[in-house]
Image (cartoon, rainbow, N blue to C red; front, side):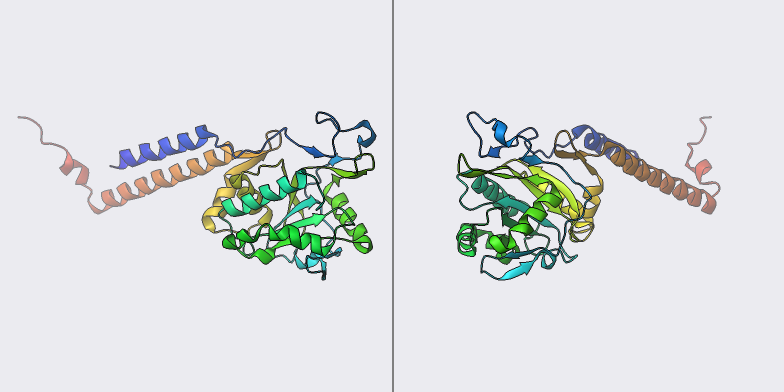
Length: 296
């Protein structure tokens, strides 16, 4: 029975290491809004649009915005040390891409098993100073069904207006999100990406594209939470995964899993040694008694 248990443990560890469970994002797919032709960024916008990752940097938390009800609020109210924050840069007259990003964000909220408002919050912040709280409120109304997955008040739609335009620019600069107004098309050119911030405002991860895998979102939020979110199993899970910058996905950390598996094996073998040592100490002749009698 003990042998069978050991074999089962070893087999399970081998499967875990060999599976290389991929939690995927569209690695090379970074769509841009405000493009010309077949998807190439116009030369006039080269360098003005893109993303430079500032992992580990701190965003300023004293920035002020207007919420969907027209009330002024500070980023510090969301980054209060309690929950991580997922930030999407959008604008509400966007012809297509922003809606896709918001839909992907909403799908991730619905499909991950973390609870909106309890485990994390979401901020959709407008990059267009012409956007009004009324527009933001109309955009938020599309996602009322998310109330089934947590507190809808934790899905924030903030605008800036002309008086707070510097705030969104400062936030975008802090996370390396570069966007630009293209007067020729009458649109903003920008990337499709969400940024994860720790509960205190540290940049922890970038999620690219318009289809966020819920497992990737969960692992990203657990990582961003710095231990404030999830149960003991979730916190153990995040130690077994690492982020692959090239693939833009989480995969099993083979070395970590191997170390954990090795430690478990040592515990099992150590337990067996203690068991047999105690058994022998209690009955020195136990082994002799257990041997079959010699054949005459």
